[in-house]
Image 1 (cartoon, rainbow, N blue to C red):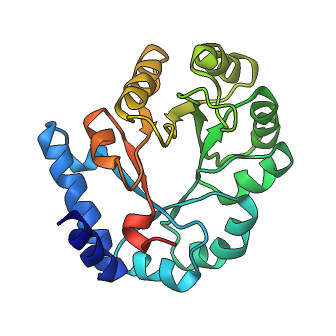
Image 2 (cartoon, rainbow, N blue to C red):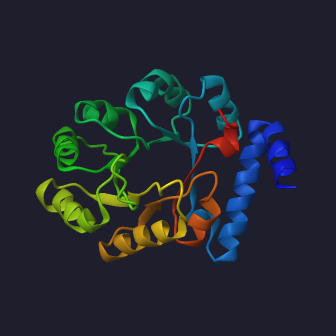
Amino acid sequence: MASQETNHEESLSIPSRLQLVRDHIHRAAADCDRLDAQIELVCVSKTQPAEKILEAINARQRIFGENRVQEAQQKWPDLKAKFPDIQLHLIGPLQSNKAKEAVEIFDVIETIDREKIAQEIAKVLKGRPSKPKLFVQVNTGSEPQKAGVLPESADSFIEFCRSQCGLHISGLMCIPPADEQCSPHFALLALIAKRNGVSELSMGMSSDYELAIQLGATFVRVGSAIFGHR
């Protein structure tokens, strides 16, 4: 039965899959007495061509996520010029030499995770009237191959960003280990956010965004459930 449902969803158009995700978000929010307005859908458009992205834009989607600065520079300037209410999130690792470009094209940078990045972002932002929202990425699974500050270092790193770099940290982001239950990781991120006075939580992807909503997500990052599997 699950396989049939998956095949059915894969056969749907991008607007139809987008609406299905929105319906799931609505139900998940209602189940835990939250409002739809408290949860934003980040449509993960990495590797997707402009024509597919336009289908989502024409279906009233306005928040998108990209993994790489260079790919975003190639795809988004024209689209953002045509649709000025687009909000673009960087959800992939950021190299310090790309800090200026990231600040110029992204409205939200979700992946600040080390002192050098924080310092470079601070330099670039100095004197700028318009500044992107900044999130700290937490490696909740302490995976050596994955980006993100370790959970035990998160408090001190957030304080470093604030006091040493003068950055306003709006949120936290995590990507739980693929082979583990995601709920403890979402709960850990919410706990770190609460004790540091951070209000935004970017957590949950195509396979687990409904659970993330129940555990406090304010942004969910959904790609394959909207665009189909690559």
